[in-house]
Length: 257
Ligand SMILES: Nc1ncnc2c1ncn2[C@@H]1O[C@H](COP(=O)(O)OP(=O)(O)OP(=O)(O)O)[C@@H](O)[C@H]1O
Image 1 (tube, rainbow, N blue to C red):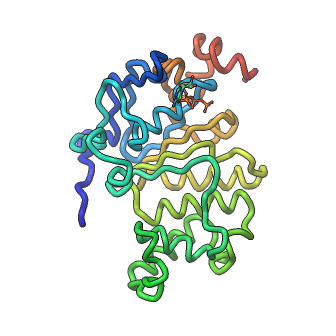
Image 2: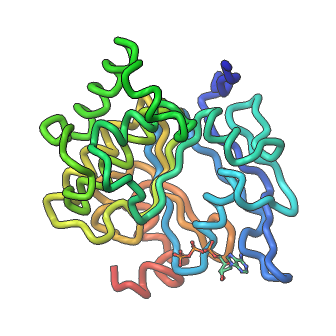
């Protein structure tokens, strides 16, 4: 089935307007307004409990807001869709911990992602079309794992697993990618490679990265959004938010940045 594509004629791929989420009276998101431009790489920062995970949960249909609107492009109301539909419409999410299939090869993991119905993989494995094989080769190239294609995912380093999981999302050709703390637990070289990978994805994809590692954010971000108590506190270049007095007080100051 073909799903409608997000209408981005105004240059915006994600609209979140006046979004509020309460848990037992506590406002995890509080009249939040956020716009992500088509093709941009946006970093989302904020202290623990600022609402970053809740925001991702709302976009992906895991949490329903009490109020507000969330649109994918101008035309797709995400609040009317369930998690599976949201994924099929083109929003991919990568959680912090990699969840690759360790007993399968890199190639097989990517193959599975091409077909979102994972139960069918065994019967379909020999039926890849030329185009699908090209797609997998392209993803292997993008994530830098061409030489590892026949290795078991369980043999990969933590960073390689993260890249494979990003590749698994890419295989589904998402328009918007949500990536949670991609630099956590990686070596210095892996962090650099991850920064290059995420930067290379922007343009064709829109990418939202939640990250606590400020040097990593500085290395990739053009625009940074700072969340505080469920709302956007500041938004702009890294230099702008780092010199923003309120941001310094409530967030960066705490971390000594
Ligand atoms: N299911 C829930 N039930 C009750 N409270 C929740 C629930 N989910 C989140 N919260 C609360 O909402 C607030 C925002 O949480 P959220 O996880 O979105 O923050 P965060 O910015 O992602 O923090 P962290 O950086 O620690 O992951 C927190 O105070 C959290 O305790």
